[in-house]
Image (cartoon, rainbow, N blue to C red; front, side, top):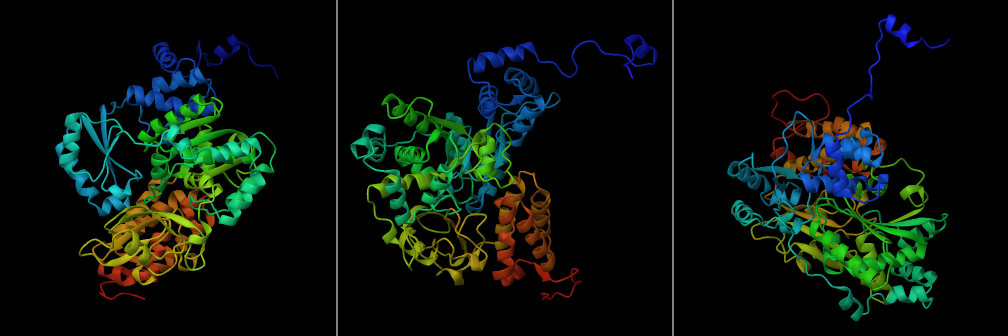
Length: 581
């Protein structure tokens, strides 16, 4: 049937609107986009970088600028808006909303900072600062757990922050990152740096020989999964070219800061490990994904990459530095790749795995910073495999925080116990504190009691106790800590950081937190909800989120009772005053 003519449509009471539908691009906003981004690439994978440029320039993201950016990049506005609103470090301001103050102070509320008094710090700053001039926000882990509590003033981080120190820094206008003293290219090469890369390129060292050395040393992925490095190379190399290498420097696990330590002290060693890995798998490019909470490191890596290009060690543009935007989920490798492609960082369904179809749909090697750090050392014959204890192999970098005298990154033998680590490397517990519990793998690794402080801290040893080592983020708790408050902090983190893609995680983390905040805990209900999260969540966030609660139920019923929690196996008991079985 033919469409009615315009006159027939009008006669039927339907009217057409002249011009384009929807809100139109503001020419002034488009001109500002042109002036800011100039000749920058307009491909989708640059979207988050361009959003950062807007946020940095204007202090927020207005809808007029987002529409102009969508027009400039030839992307649907819905996709630009969805990406901008996914990440915590972008302030999207709608037409009827006020713009945020020019300055933001963020107070870390991760568990180590909570133990060190972050809540009192934030309350004091709320009372002392004019919200019209300076807003105070809570923020997840900033990767400085050994310096807790931490506040971020603009782009500057203040360690062991106090209200007086924050106010003094604001008065001085100290808002830029503190300079980092790092090993420059000339010094690294003088110490033998980039020898491995030169030998691989000349053929003096073969890829097969390097893989054999890494396998012999027992090098595994040190971001948490622990997959053997040499086998990962082989899996990626089996795919068709082009292939890519992604450096995962988005350590957002509360309690973890080892990657920051290695990048700040030896960025070229990490880059040499990345270049050797790229050569081993035939990568067409290297993408370094660095979390936005490390602004000083962004400057370091930009300069280090420029040094390599100027020295002719790498072609310009071969190493691409990308900036995260405040999303813990992007530590998961497929979510990280989604973010690199300019999208919300939501984990992909697998298979296919990223080794088969990763960045831009191509075979992709994703390696953690510390894994890459070790490659040049192992190739040079550094001792590794023989360093372990209790039949374990290698060395581990433990990020230790909490109730110890010497928090920090401690290099110790794999298989060392918590008690040995604290006594031999961390100066013991703080005065007046007695070991109550510890987290062996950050927020997601579960909680173990002091009675299990003699377990080896290594891969595959903690699982029978419902825990895992992950990235070796050790948070030490004492008899002066409230374990119920600890679990609340951890569950609130997971609920806040859930990407929302899958229902079990999105709703389950919130429901688990709500149940945790009651005084009557239905054990069967909590365990059933925890199992649903583990079985049905797409990625490790939802699968690991119940671990703190499961640990409390398993190891700490007496501590829960002292905290006023009544455990029961059915409807809440009525005023019996007794702990139900």
